[in-house]
Image (cartoon, rainbow, N blue to C red; front, side):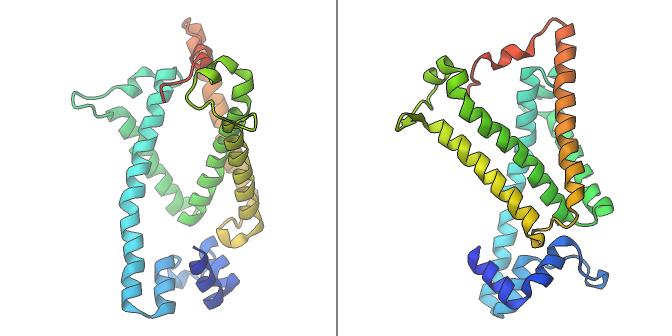
Length: 241
């Protein structure tokens, strides 16, 4: 990555990269040039160009498989915890999570439509999604730091009860997660060539994501409580994972 960054900056310059990643290129150029095209054009070597294209082509099956498997898995956990309807966790006779998969596909289509027709720049959608996702990393890091002290019995019974100089290892992991998230936020806000051009918009998108999550959780909690189910008891023990 450092080598590619050096090639980009020495060949095309910061203004070009800022425009390319932030959707500021002239409309006559079409979509922003991909990294493999810029690198191959600079090196001007066929073998290197093929290698760069393969890194792009072979990357997508892996990332698509990961992104397609993660949402149904998350919805399964929400359904088991009572935050989503139980029907979301239903599977076919072959074990296919049909409803969760349909919801995932619908969400992917909606995100794609947003990137094409509203944001006008898919890279900015990735930036917004990344910054919104980092909020969960901060929450997980905070939970990791407080877990050994707030749930001492559960921590001692877990498989991750290792300590370094008397401090639980999970505390170091939590601190690392928080510091990493803070650094990434700083980098996105400090360097415009990462794609965060309209900084004021990120407040609405990230704030909206947090507000939606809070409303969904407390709404589900209220509905379950009216049915005589206390979903807070779910967090009285550690999940199997």
